[in-house]
Length: 404
Ligand code: UTP
Image (tube, rainbow, N blue to C red; front, side, top):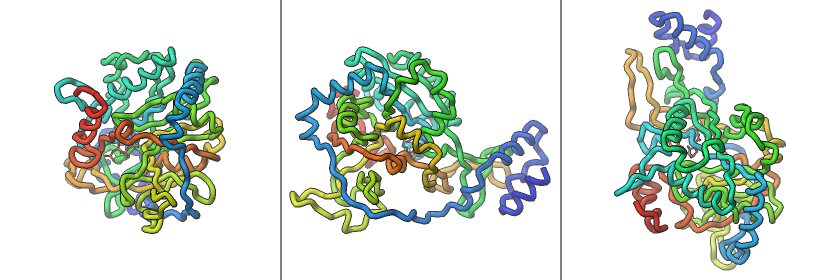
């Protein structure tokens, strides 16, 4: 106990023991155990920009090219699915703070006159593929310790929306402490330091550490993992044509991309960095990069990523253990104040620390940018209203013939 106290004092974080004396012995041990295992390195993370290499535009397999080859590519993808080589990984550990619902985002009902949960939408899309392939494929779902039980119960109660539950495997991502604007770690309860999910970049490490690969049947045949976000309700999962294209081009990973709507659009762009595939974030792009054009007039850096990637497992294993950069994000984080009152802020008040799946692309030897039509495949639900909102996603679902 004294060790911990002096360690916290040295870090200027002694306030975490503010309520220690009023806790019962079980809560005291819980707090001490947590303090011992905490990753204090987040205290050193600032908004410093990472040193990046030399960027160059990267081409894509375009809509036209895909259309010409669709039957052949689809057959290659379906064949891989039938051989059990493809799994899907649903990233559902986020807190969805911008949407403002306390439930996991996948439980959000996007319907208007009927009920249509986001999970239902996604699984419905995946079922189209499994029907074509004539087989289920493993669906791995990453949750966080905050939403794991609720997510599992919800999906089970809805009979996995028609998916075969024996092919669904959950794993829980890891956490990092949150830090307020004064550089102080926070308490979420008198005996608990506030932590948040450590970003979507930790999925492969968490999946490996969960032991799933050892436990599931047929894990040995798995070669590819299609990783995707929970919040794109038009998400095509394990899209056979995409899988087939990456295989037929001999690439070690693939990324679905959409053409940018405007030079200033706030989207990460697939490109080359020092000759290797990479993603440059919109805030890292110079004006010259944003407005650079090809001879045909189209933007040179135009292929925006939509958080739908295909990774080859052996390449992921090669890069296993390489640490990804930690980004800090300013978010709303509930906390216990000095009077022991729970405060639920209405505006961002603290930093969360996250690794991002997009940084994993830099660790791959090659990547196929696979262009998809934005209006058919990209309807993210991030905000309550406005851009990338419930409203805009509903409009896009309806445009695609989904009755709401
Ligand atoms: P976002 O970056 O939109 O984060 O996640 P979020 O936490 O869901 O939402 P906000 O920013 O608080 O409003 C993009 C995808 O990554 C997943 C999300 O569930 C979503 O599918 N994600 C994000 C995780 O799985 N874990 C995380 O720690 C963060």
